[in-house]
Image 1 (cartoon, rainbow over the protein chains, first blue to last red):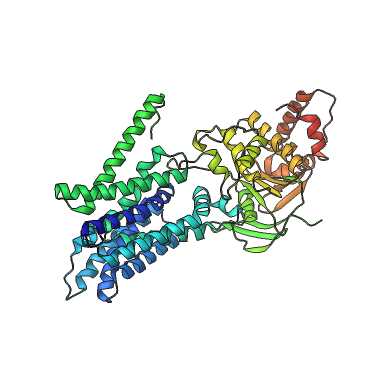
Image 2: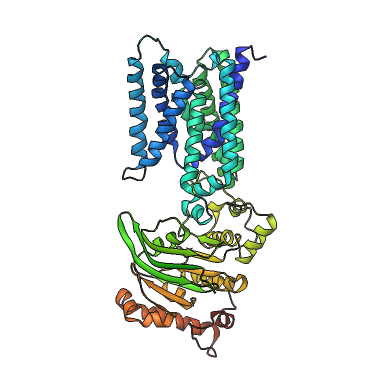
Length: 272
Length: 259
C-alpha cells in the first residue's frame, strides 16, 4: 500500500495536518502568527546548511528553526515590539537562506521544492519522520496542555499556580520548530505557517472550548490535506498550494456560516 | 504561629527602575490586609513578587511551607480567538469535578454560569468567576490585585463584602490592592500604606489618620472615608458602632446581611 506515491502523499499530508492544528490554535491564541512565519522561513537557511555540511535536511532545518525560535523568544521584551522583531527575522532569514544556498556549489537543488514542498515525492523514510515528529508534537502538547493553556491565558495566573510561563513558551517553541522541520517536505516553508493558522482560524466559530477548537482544526487540517491532494490530481495543480487553497476556502465557508448564524441570532452587528 | 508570608527588606525592579526599595511585611493566617499607595508605588509589583512572577533584587521572601495561593489578577484579557467557557476556565490549571466547580460558583454568587463563554460575562460576573477559580485551589492566601476594576461602586462594595464572607467561611488570609480606599479599608483588618517601602501600617482608622498617609493621599480621602461610614450607617441603622479595626467577622455579620 505504501508503494503507491498517492497513499504516501495522503498519509504525509494527514500527519502534518493533525500535528499543525492544535499547535496552530496555540499560535493563534497567543497572537504568534508571525512566529510561525519566522521559524518557517529560517528553514531555508537550514536547507542550505544541511547541504553544506552534508546533514539530513530534517536535522539542518530543525537546528536552524529551533535556534531561530529561541533567538526570537530571548530578544522579545528587549525594547522591540514582537511584530517588528519577527518581521525582521522572518525576512532576513529567508534572504540569508537564499544567499547561503547559492554558495553551496556543486549541488543543483530544486529550491521550489523547499519553498512549496513536494508532497508527491515523499518516501517511506520521510513518512516515518513526519509521523514520528507529529506524534512527538502531539504528545508534547497533550502532556503540557493544561499548563500551556494557563500560561496562554495569563502569565501571572500561571505563576501563582506554580507554572513557569517561560518554560511553557519553550515547549511551544520546540513544538513549532519540530512541525516546521517535519512539514518542509510536504507543504514547504512558505506554506507551513498557513497550515498552522488557517485551519485553527476556521475552527474558531465552531468551538466553545479550547479542546473543541483544536479538534475541529485537526479535522479541517486533515480535510484540507486530503482534499487538496485530490484537487491537485483533478486540476493538475501544484499539491502544496492546493492544500492551502482548500484550507482557505474552508476558512471562508466557516466565516460565512459564522456571519449568517450571528445575523440569525440578531447579534449580527457584532464585528468579528 | 508562623506567618504565611514574610518579606524582609525586599527590593525589586520594574523595567530598570527600583520600585520596591525595602519592603518589610508579615501576613498571618486568616487576616485581611489591604495595600494602598499612589500610582507607581509598587503595589502590583509587590503582588507579583509574592506570586513569584518578579524576582527579588535583594532582601528575602519567606513563604509558609506548602502555601497555596489563589490569585485574582488585575485584569484578564481573553483573546477573542480563544473559546473558553466558564466551566473550562475553572479547570485551569488543575481539572476539577463538575460538583466542585458548581460549589465554587455558588460560593461567589455565580451559580449557573458554567455554560457561558467568559467573553460574554459582565464585569461583575467575570470577577466572581475569577474568584471562584482562585477558591478551587483551596488557598491559604487569596491575592486580589485591583480586583474590582471596572465595577461600579455598589458592585465593588458587594464584591468586598463577599471577600469578607469567604474569609469567614474558608479561613484564608486575604491580601489585596485597591484604589478604592474607603470601601477597601473598611473591609480590612490591617492596612499597609506603600510607597516603595511600607510607610505606615495598622488598623484602617489609624492609617487613615497617619501623617504619612495624609502626605501621600492628601486629607481629601478622609472625606471619602467619612462618606463610606455614612453609607455604612445608613445601611443598617443607628444601633451599630464601627470599630473597623477589631473582629471584622463579627462586625461583618452585624453589618452586611443584605447583598
